[in-house]
Image (cartoon, rainbow, N blue to C red; front, side, top):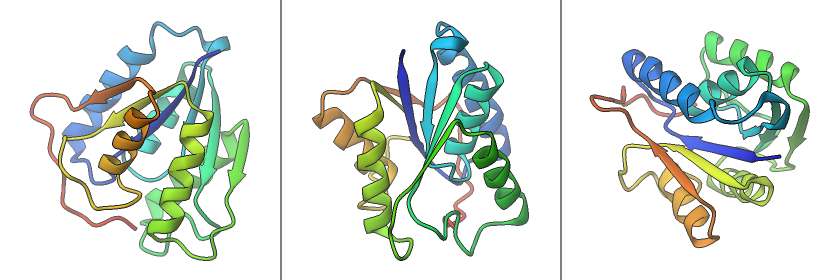
Length: 165
């Protein structure tokens, strides 16, 4: 049973979100629903799009939460609603014990994702990232661990520049 984890940008422009969802659907298409497990931190943007794509196919979702305050105080009402919906739909929820959200919590969550995964999907523009726990850091860790990495960044994709919650 393939276990596919996700990492990616939080600040996808609306048109990019639609293009990424189409690309995710195509990437997941070869996997029979009964054999598909997706692993996500349920963050806004790429994580949420991936989790929705896995569930829409009938796959199983494992949520790895970096800490008890996830998705964070800066999350919008829509982001919180999506998080709550996906957490409720998850087959399993792994809540890590970080006392507060920050780089160390995100690094720990990424490490846990990689321990569970056979493959990583990165919704990533290829940029240097925001340091430990970010998308670029996760891609580098997956590659160092020998995991296959599928980078999705459809032509014309853009980011909004909004900071993560």
